[in-house]
Amino acid sequence: MSSILDSKPNDLREGEVVIALPDHSDASVYFIGRIRTPWKTRKDCPKNARAARETGAVCTLELDPRFAAGLLDIERCSHLVVLYWMDKARRDLVVQVPGHLGKGRGTFALRSPVRPNPIAMSVVKLVKVDGTKLEVIALDCIDGTPLLDIKPYYASTDSIPDAMTGA
Amino acid sequence: MSSILDSKPNDLREGEVVIALPDHSDASVYFIGRIRTPWKTRKDCPKNARAARETGAVCTLELDPRFAAGLLDIERCSHLVVLYWMDKARRDLVVQVPGHLGKGRGTFALRSPVRPNPIAMSVVKLVKVDGTKLEVIALDCIDGTPLLDIKPYYASTDSIPDAMTGA
Image 1 (cartoon, each protein chain N blue to C red):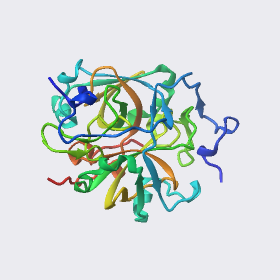
Image 2 (cartoon, chains in turn yellow, brown; image 1 turned 135 degrees about the vertical axis):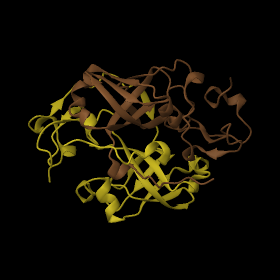
Image 3 (spheres, chains in turn purple, blue; image 1 turned 90 degrees about the vertical axis):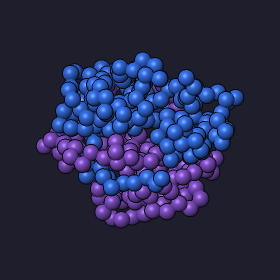
Image 4 (cartoon, one colour; image 1 turned 90 degrees about the horizontal axis):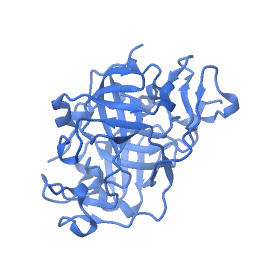
């Protein structure tokens, strides 16, 4: 099954735009753990975060024990912001043609993992804390995806129920 | 004025916990632009995202022209998720003692810029698109902060109005 994630420079879709990335990077990240999900391959994954939530699947954030103390008080949060690294995604596409759209859209107007910095952001419900393992609902990424950060979700600033995207 | 951001290893607050970071990083990021805000120093910044929104201040995401095509269709989004790099923050504190709290809390239960990967996430209202400059309300970071990513905000998955944090 073909996917934009699998595409090589030679099999771009009509309308997609590749750029030259900068010749050096500017900062470095640590993988602070791994995300365990039921999805072992990309084609097993739910299509998006909404589909993931609808499955009700429980995923696990496995934090490197080095950072264990960072979880103090985490159980006071009903929901978390999770940042993770889409390590299988190419980084040089600025216009993509999602299959469901059939035309080009800018990378920054898409939640595709393909982006200059392949950092995904998901809002999850915290179900259980067991040492350095956090059970959450729901993520749509492949099993073993590197974890970058966990943050408390604040409805006061993060929740915009009437946010819209046009047709 | 003293701040956790300014603290050196020798002036930790009572109860704060420092760890040894991993001896190597795992991946690299590009700064894709800069964030322009009215706040030139750390002590000028609003205390948090809610305070920033209340100021009504318009900030500007200045995207490196290299990535300009990535903005195609961005104007269809009323709100955006902005990821940025808190380049002045130390990365080795896993328990912090915020002044307003007066006791230790885990880094992953705080939105402090001090974290292993100092990536901040803010939800902003998109006011105007002018070439590679996006005017948004509101951010609470210092002028010149490096930009990592811009994403569409989806109320369907990103808005949890009844999310809670305990006392």
